[in-house]
Length: 70
Image (tube, rainbow, N blue to C red; front, side):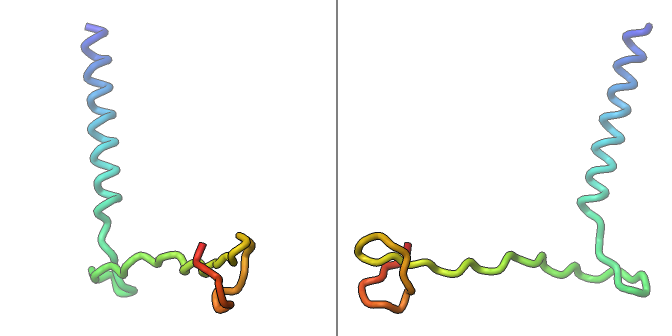
């Protein structure tokens, strides 16, 4: 009987955890008035500046002659 309670308890915790995590993942966006709106796209990180190397392998400005993107 004790083992049966343990299994039921674990299944209940698993079900609650799965239900809670899916409700957070599917949370819709709301505006200031509380109406549902389309969620804005996530903000991406700014693009990294390109780095170039000269013929000797040292970093150089990309506009200089002989410089190639690293």
